[in-house]
Length: 463
Ligand code: SAH
Image 1: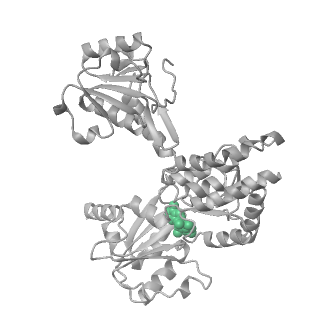
Image 2 (image 1 turned 90 degrees about the vertical axis):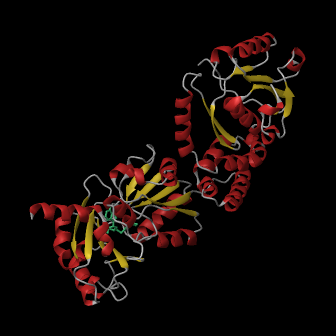
Image 3 (image 1 turned 45 degrees about the vertical axis):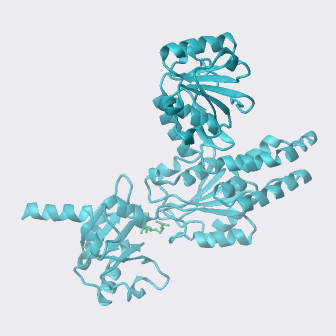
């Protein structure tokens, strides 16, 4: 490490900027963003645009020795010979100097920056590869929540009050860890800042009284299977969990993204074995949250689409536990994208119905009227074993038996399989698709899918 990253307060005196061109302008922008008083030396007025000079002390001509007095730093990009001379002058006066693209002449360099207000990340490569620094910055941008800077600001406002409790042996470190990883952080980062602040005030008061903090539940959609289809928010939730209660539908590739120290509990129905049941799941969620743990309830697809997320949410709220919902990519969207199957199509298919074939009254009693219209795409969840009822019901309601259908099994997983054909043959197609989970899509849009086109090509080759 040749350069130590430090955070420099540039508001106390002028920063000299010498030179023109895009690189000097980039430095001007970053210096202004940091609140620096910039004294900008250019060769003539013609060199600069008026809006660039706003709030800047513009000087014509190179800096004189007097200009160096009182300056807090020098930044230059003014041509090799001038730069070298300026760097020598600055160094002789122990003035921090940056010559653009010349780490050898510089006593400080500009890192690549992720700027989220109070939260700033600096990435340096010692001047060896600005492009690498930029790539790293992009990766960090992706994983840092958007509101993290404002969140830091909120914590900053309560820091003094917490520090005042230190003399009683209170651990402020543990307190803030719980705030950051727990419900308050989750609420704030999901945009509910007023609620987060109210919860923080309660916790600060509880800390004053010596009471422990309460936990929190995040009901998280894991998407259809491919771990890269997790949302960033879901990923953050998995990384901050103390315990994860997961459904069987969630793929092992996704469970591999859970924080290593977290406890993972399978609560869903597993092949051949019943799950622990909804009431037991609700009670467990409540008990874990009340014990102060950071709970993630992980569900396949989206928690609010045939996921019983609504019921769990109500049970938790009734028990006074704070809940946040993290949406996921539902099976219909994930499977359709993978199969190149547009769920709507201009003029042709203007309506999408998401339905389940697993109803209390049984698949043969589903009311199919309203789904017979040609312009409606029907995405049927939990329909694999009820394929014959689905076909019979739709045809009886008036849907054309020649309507294109797709059975999309194990969508977005390594062993995914899509089978297409017409509605009249749906039971055979379902059998050919193999094991679930599988989604049935009925509608003219299926003829636009990649799977359908490939099947047609095969038929033509055989003919
Ligand atoms: N909440 C989930 C749905 C749960 S119901 C979601 O939003 O996707 C379970 C049904 O979802 C399965 O029977 C199947 O119809 C569908 N499903 C879930 N994951 C799937 C996948 N990877 N491929 C195909 N269908 C899937």
